Every structure is written in C-alpha cells, then in structure tokens.
Image (tube, rainbow, N blue to C red):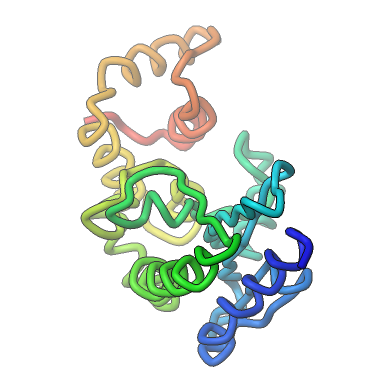
Length: 224
C-alpha cells in the first residue's frame, strides 16, 4: 500500500469506536466531527500526516478542536481582536496526556497496529472527557473559572477559552480565569506592563498571548 493509503486506512480504523459515540467521519476519515446537544458546539478530532512519508515511515498526528457557532458570530459582531472562527479550545493529544509533547506515531509495517490502538486509547481517555465537559455549558464555565484550561493533570493552562468565557460567563468568571492563567504562568509583571502600554496606545509584547491581553484589556478585566 502507498503511504497515503496506509494513513487513510488508519484514520478510518481509529474512527470506529468514535462513530459509535456519535462522531461522523469526513475528508476520507481525516476528521471526526460531533455536534453538541445544544447544536452550538462542534467537537472535532483531526488526523494529520507528513509530506515526508515513505514506505518505511508513515506519520500520524492526532489533534482535537472545539469551536462554537454563536461565539464566532459574537466575535465578528463585536469586532474583537481575536480569532473569528469561534475557536474555544484546541490541542495535540500529546499535550493532553502523560506524553507531554507534540508526538507523531508511525503506521509503517509492524508499528501500525500498536499505533492505532495507542491513539484510540489516548483519545478515549484524555480527549473525550473534555468534549463531555463542554456538553454542559455551566459545568464548563465553572471548571474553567477555577482551573483554567488545565483539563487534567497533564494539560497546561492557556487563554484560548477567554472569548468563550466572556461570551457565556459572567465578567467575574472570565476575570477569575484570566487571573488563574496569569498566576499559573507567572506572567503578572509582563501583563501589568502590557496593560500600562495599552493605556498609552503602545505596542505590547506578550507573545502568543498578545490578542488575549488586548481582549482582556478592552473588556476591562482586572489583573489581581
């Protein structure tokens, strides 16, 4: 089989237990999609591969994504300086699990079967609980307010869910989440400096957090 065919075969084999959970495959099995009960969220499992595949090495990278239809609309209407695709959360399965790194699995030869099994196990154990949490909006908001995006003992916090918290939570809840991230990431001084710069219409430098700091400032979230 060609590397591409091996990859597609693996995607569809991994999909089997998730189809039973309500996910629907698309793009030849490279994407598994499930709509939340309230029709507002889309849960996706994506499988990527490599342009460097060969008969001896066929890579597969699993990722998860949660997007929100009404959040996308709100972000666009408010003209907010964040993503406009309604993104709530995304991550690589390696960062949701004890692996703790961006990892690919090999599907070539004898590696195929154990790689497929490992990916299924990881997704069931570490990705599905996150999807389940977001099925209940209030539970998700309460969790993020207290724990940020640390959905288990392995995930690191991020500000990805800030637009979601601002749209669906109370301002105080979004503020608690914002400050949880600040303290867990030890970036308080940097964010305080950024707020001061924004007051003066200066350019800030908070790396990947730039857009979220600007959003927090524009929504008058306090740094505690």
